[in-house]
Image (cartoon, rainbow over the protein chains, first blue to last red):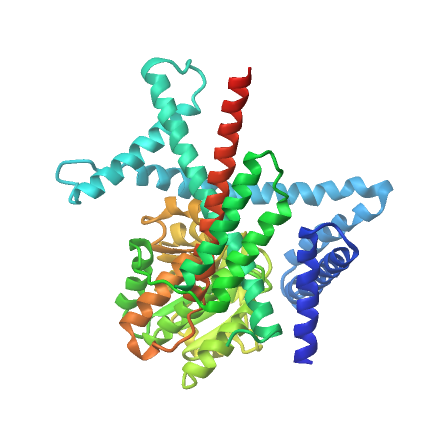
Length: 207
Length: 303
């Protein structure tokens, strides 16, 4: 069974990579199997984890669960075109609840704490780092400030203001470059993982 | 020597492409794929490895595990799937090894349903063979997956039992010894989120780390690492970014704990092909830009 699984995985891996040559039936078969299995996997997981464990087993203990179940049922009405519009109600509930949940935490963590973290000491008793730390703090404070200026369009980007905006766009470009480099590393890791599987588990070329 | 041969072969190929492109010959995308395949496959076959020193952001995670007193409770959240596994599974394994070596107690959970399968890999490769004396429920426990993304975190920041009434084997929360002193995430000494998607480390910081004032460390796929750097060091105590971060950690762990000199180091192993592939991609970027600017100058001279 193990051997069959490894051969099947190798067959599907090569099928997916065959797309790099050109679109073909082998690729389409592999892609369809992947999508089908993913969908089936999630249906089973969500049924047992959400419907069964969170609602069915506890339905008599917590009456509020029936409200959630009713909203879930309304969502399924999308499958009936004539009354499909009713599904907007549970969707609106989800939108509102998610916005409320995220709103406060996002404001606190991504705005307040992040702003506080950008206020760095450059000198005086609060600063106890090396020259390297000083430069690092300067880059952080200057880069953030100039980056914000770039997105301030109520004043024409001319003179000192324009120069600061130019520093801002350079900061953003360097950030994009770093992100691209990391993305390449991530994608390469996935390729290495698959080739490692083919060489080690399938062909037995690596110990 | 092997590195020089591989780079030499790839360099000759790239030079041939460059000369061809100067003569106006199109470079088929499939040629680029072949170069990347060679750049990845050849170092794997000859096993090229490099030495690594931990960067401060990786060292901070290591130091945190070292500074926690023995018996501290650490939560590991496996927030990834098999697609991310080549990058982050090595982190999960080495961090688990480090935590158990230091005598910490571990609660495993996941916000990705597929994380349960990935935990089984750690169980099979690290816990069972290297720490067979550690008892499930006492030294570590797997409470598994719960659907609900940030909703799950919003609950466990104040009440674990409400969201996880049992572990994955159906053992009731009150019977699990490790939870004797742990009622919510606020009682944890450290949280380690390993992943790279959503829900993941951002949700842990926003919904548990900041509101609950719990220290969080992370190991993430490289693709999301740049977005998480702003959280360091105030909201994240440290970060392992991609396979490079994992390789730094593996290398440092082996150095500090020589008895693990023979342990599997998949991240260090992957950095060989990773480095060669990056050199090839950089060469393609340089060649592409050179051809573009030379072509533009030629057009300018003709006009």
